[in-house]
Amino acid sequence: MKFDPPLQEGTLVKRYKRFLADVCLPSGEVITIHCPNTGSMKGCLFAGKKVWFSHSSNLKRKYPHTWEVAEAENNDRILINTGLPNSLVRDAIEAGCIEPLRGYPHCRGEVRYGDEKSRIDWLLSGGDKPDCYVEVKNVTLLASAGKGFFPDAVSLRGQKHLRELARVVEQGMRAVLIFCVSHTGISSVSPAAHIDPDYARILGEVIEAGVEVYAFGFDVSAVGVEFRRQLPVIMPAASGVS
Image 1 (cartoon, rainbow, N blue to C red):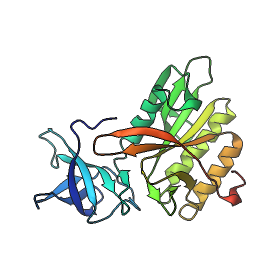
Image 2: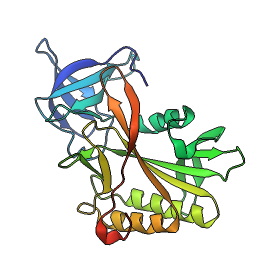
Image 3: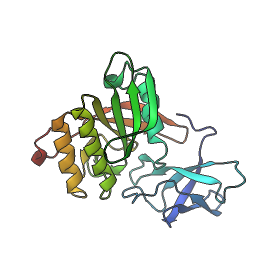
Image 4: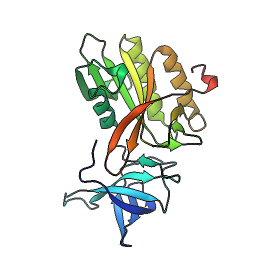
């Protein structure tokens, strides 16, 4: 995925009211831009570090600029626009980059499914294969030594999605959870048992039930975001899954 035109650069002053961030431009002017990440952004907010943002020509927008990428303390780059990971994973699937999901000619998004009235991110079908339900989770929380964690806050919605995926497997179809790692400093992913122990526990249970879990890293820059490689998913020892 390319940013066209390339993103503009500034320095983060602060993020506030969830949807807003103040950014200092190279000229010294401070502008307010839209923040498309409504989560905690734990590990993504570094005042004084670089940020990159896009510009919209839509005259109806109160804030024409959108924050896309943040710079971490060690100069790694983080994709903070949570509207993009689903598309990144779809593009990677369609390009054949994700080997376990090759061979599906059809890909539909936001399909309703499950007992808890969920919407699956991507439903793959065709090619003499069982339908495959793909849930995408964006990973941006970095601990030490390249260890990434999900979620960055207690996620009841994420727990629900895990239960729905397990029921898909019970019905004879494939269910896949993909951790989209859009932080260039992360080299492995684990469930954040220290933040949401229930999510970590349920993830271990659904893996044992047959849900497939993968993590894929992406390179992030002011020019674009590109598929990099598969990363290991490391489960806590107490989960019984490795």
